[in-house]
Each structure stands twice: as C-alpha cells, then as structure tokens.
Image (cartoon, rainbow, N blue to C red; front, top):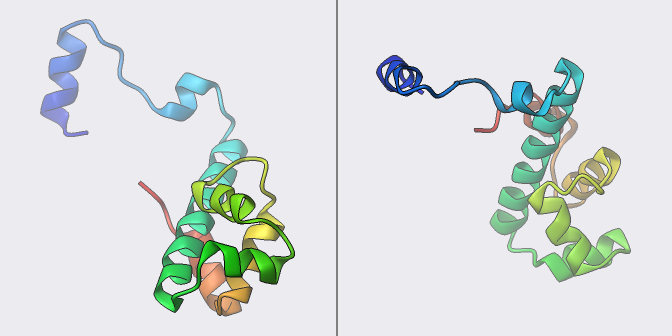
Length: 106
C-alpha cells in the first residue's frame, strides 16, 4: 500500500496493519504460510505448463483430484511433504523446489 493511501485511511480512523498482526501469527507461522502458498502456486504453474491434469497428477500421487485441487489452493490440511512430492512428480528439480520455497507470494 502506498504512503498516501495509508495516510488517508489512518486520517479517516482506520488502523492499518498486516494480516499476520491481525491474526496474531508468529513470525514462524507467517513464514510457513508463505512457503505453503509459494509451493502451491509453483505446483499449479508447473502442472499446467507440463499439460498434466489434476486427475493424472492425483493418480501418480496415489491420491484424488480433489486433494490436488486443495494442494493448489494452499489448503492447510495438505502437508508440505506432499506439496514437495507433487512438485518433484511434475518435474521440478531440487533447486526449483528450493527457489519456490524462497519465493514471496503476494
């Protein structure tokens, strides 16, 4: 958010802060959420680029299409291990997984 907009909102009586502060998340929790979102986004982009359907990926994971949809949506019930395994199945290298982990998602 730009400084002008922030000042305008604060002048109107609004409090401006981060999502993490609003939810009372620790720094570790915020980082884990960012990592999950980055892995999820990377998985969806890579799967589409490779022309793999959610159903085909699910078959390779021995899972369901709805689970793959949850993975791509960043559902908290999906483990980071499963996200990484799926990325590897669609052809990501270790370096690409590491890069995805370090990416910030807006």
